[in-house]
Image 1 (cartoon, chains in turn cyan, orange):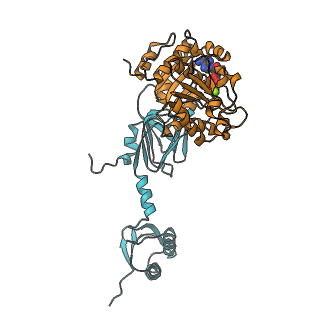
Image 2 (image 1 turned 180 degrees about the horizontal axis):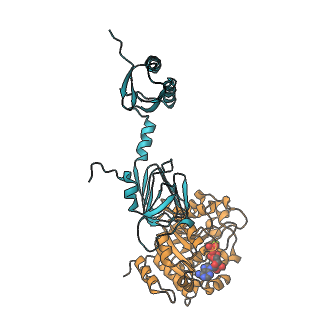
Length: 226
Length: 267
Ligand SMILES: Nc1ncnc2c1ncn2[C@@H]1O[C@H](COP(=O)(O)OP(=O)(O)O)[C@@H](O)[C@H]1O
Ligand SMILES: [Mg+2]
């Protein structure tokens, strides 16, 4: 009887896909991966790098294991791992992802000396007064006046945006870019919502709110909408 | 059972002590039994403004440390027929001499005997502030029409809003100078109230008479003919639940007055 395969190799036009069995032990998997790739790559053209996708199924791979597998594949001369996909997330990862994708609605005035921080998007129904700070992993939407500090994309998301009904911040930060107040010309009597984002020159730019529709289409979460 | 109202501001010198003295006086003039409590330990001066300095024997720290009974430390204001008393702050010890728990207990006891306890709070947000707020049921935040004072008021309001045992604070804008508001050299009332978004309970003009009266140990509220006195008396009546529209300051511009009326729901 033929033994079940722990590593199945498939060729696609984008490179190789390695289907990794998710029931065998990790060591068994590694051994077979090593063996299979040694046997397989000998005939390939060694001048070109071939990208490899690892599909781990329902196996959870730690960060070290991912590195180990990448290293193992890389040793086979012209193979390089492009992506590793697994169906499994740790609970922390799942919680973080959920938090980062959540819109947190807060109804209050963030006063001088106060810091309001959320992991996902912040929808603030109220003002941020001078000396007050709002921080979000995602976007920040202030329905009132933004007169203090706003920091969006604080975990490294430079696609994050800040919008306010009344944009008069003392400072705006998106990821690690900074926009101090003196560089800022408020839309004094225009009564127009404004937004801030990082443009293609890595500069924070302030614009009419409507500019976001074009430059950040991903803000739309509605699926199958019109 | 009475209620304890703390007069606070964050910033020093904006008029907490003056406000405490005058609200206390005005409430006593309305026939209420009032106890003024000076919690500015180490920097007491409510006694001076009230003209009661010479009669102090014991102080607040003596009371909480059990060196005397409350009634022994209370200084009676002879101008009022047993309606106004002062519990002076200690002058010699520092603020950490008293804990929030001790203040709570003290306020509970005073509330048995008085209609209103007016607590004069020290500047800052440290232990002295915490003590002043610990036993209070309500707070009045005093500010002046200056950016720094409003900023500190905002900070204090943020802290007060976290005190679940207290009602939302009310605002007094003190030392208003109309000509400066008009020229834009001072924040105008709309800016301040919109910014702080808490209810306004009174406005007091900048008035030399206030300083003169304080220096004589006679709170201005005793003098029925001054504008500032009327302002303090009106604040007292609003505390008592009367709905009195804000009096326009002399030459107050119309826009401001109508906004103020809106604040009190007067049409
Ligand atoms: N409405 C007013 N008009 C003029 N002077 C005032 C007024 N209110 C307060 N002052 C003066 O300002 C100074 C500081 O007031 P005070 O009540 O001691 O402030 P705080 O207790 O907040 O430190 C005092 O000299 C006082 O007389
Ligand atoms: Mg004082």
